[in-house]
Amino acid sequence: MPCEQRVLVTYDKKKTPQTYELICKGECDDKTACKKKVEEKVDGKTHVTREFCACKEGKGDEDKNRHIVLYTERKKKGGKIEQQYFKCEWDDKNKCPDKTKCAASPVGNGWFDDDPEKLKWMEFECSCVPEDEAWPED
Image (cartoon, rainbow, N blue to C red; front, side, top):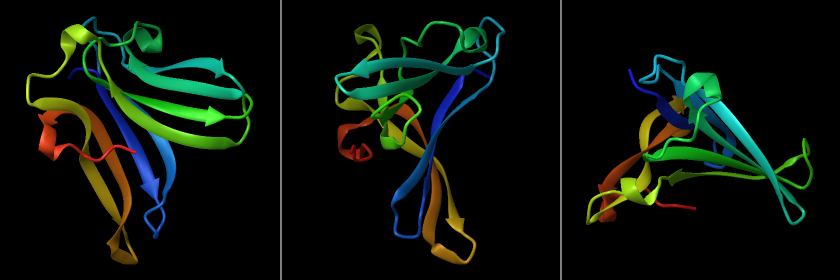
């Protein structure tokens, strides 16, 4: 199984996102585990954490193919989360074919036990989808 890369988003009953978590599973082609890699930078007064899945136990290079990246913004390192979001990223040689776009697609979900009409969580991964079927971006 290749390196599986997803973001899990949990929601409250008002459909407001509560938590975001990067999930890395599987074994890479080089037989090492696919694990989370974290990069941090300061952008003006904002501390940005960028998380993605990488081979070599999370010490390898970022995937050049389509993959999901989780961003977390704080006013200072370790401070309160101001914003979280995820994006699909790739290098230009690995873009999607014409009339499709790389977008986060829902691949799993769950509902509240006491209110099966309300979504409790969703998992997303990046894939090439027809432009008119892409999940809306924030």
